[in-house]
Amino acid sequence: MKITVASICKQGGREYNQDFVAGTVLENEACLVVCDGLGSYVGSEVASRLCATKIIDAFEKTHAQSHDRAFLPETVQSYVLSAHNYVADYKENNPEIKSSCTTVACFVTDGNTSVMSHIGDTRIYLFRKGKLVFQTRDHSLSQVAVEMGQISLRDIRTHKDQNKLTRVLGNDYYIEPDCEVTHDALAAGDAIILCTDGFWEYVFEEEMEQDIADSATPEEALIRMETRLLSRVNKFNDNYSAIVAFVSKN
Image (cartoon, rainbow, N blue to C red; front, side):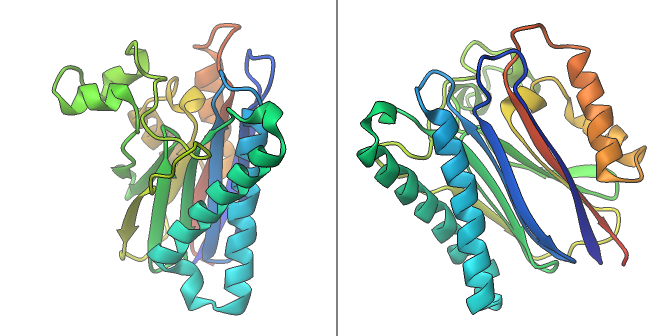
């Protein structure tokens, strides 16, 4: 079994790109991270970069020291905590970006167990046998509206509070990421997508399923999805980023 990955990280119609993607893959093992710095806070492009790179660094160091421990849920949670502390320390020494913060989505797998940890509205999707079987729950006021029965999950994309987050990384206080674990081994045909709201806002889940099914590689699937996105955005669209991972036989 082998994991192959493609990614994009685009500025869109904004003055700066505050998204950041990072990852490390070794055959059937992977640590993938997508972060989205909050656009209204100065320096959030720094927060997103520091967060993503710190998680990858923490994973690689742990993997080198203790292979099995690197994939434990509590260890994955510690990667995110270390990233939060790293961002907080950096902000303390650079007060000009004291308000900066970021979302984070982290997918870690050894092929048998997969751990999905996230803060904010950067999403993780898991597809099996061509169908979406899991997606993370946004930390946003729009997600609260869904849970109160005021809107449908699909309506988050156009809801007035879609960009108002209830949880971020790098803030003055730390709230643990949501953490989901699946012990179902990855299999050929599975796919994983991590993406910011600037991406999923314009690409619907059923379209992700279709583009995965129609593509031989993650690069091809990502091109199809970005084509959909670009046909729908205006010139002021948000930064958009995504990692698409395909699972195949060796």
